[in-house]
Length: 198
Image (cartoon, rainbow, N blue to C red; front, top):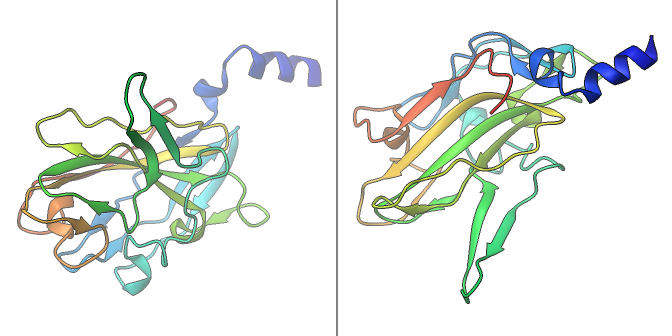
């Protein structure tokens, strides 16, 4: 049996039954930067676990102090230097508390990790990861971060577009409108269910 199981995973079948959100997280953000989400099941390596629900409060702000999962061990910050260039680009970083330059935009991929407390519950604060791609000018194409999803499942995506003339810090006042949570809709927050590859 163990031989069959090993062969199954080795043949790339992880994406068919492995890592995905099994319901609608219903992740939302209010006009005062507070998030809320519903209890949702997700699966990593065939193990089903649960994200516990939370209502909009100060413990749901998209800041590094609140979302303490930070970056997962398989997906540390990634800085690259292109051939023939003297400058570096950060193409994977923590979205929470990130400073986004004026007239720039960035994608954030939200994941939740496999190994929570003994088995079933995982909160977005402690086990969630918010991966931002490279921040680029609005005249350029924003790209999603490249991730190793061996131990994580994708549950949501945030597109943040700073249309103002100054830098904005994610989670600070006036940023929710740029993620679809307020009256201005320069960005969007998308819940992703049943996504087995990203």
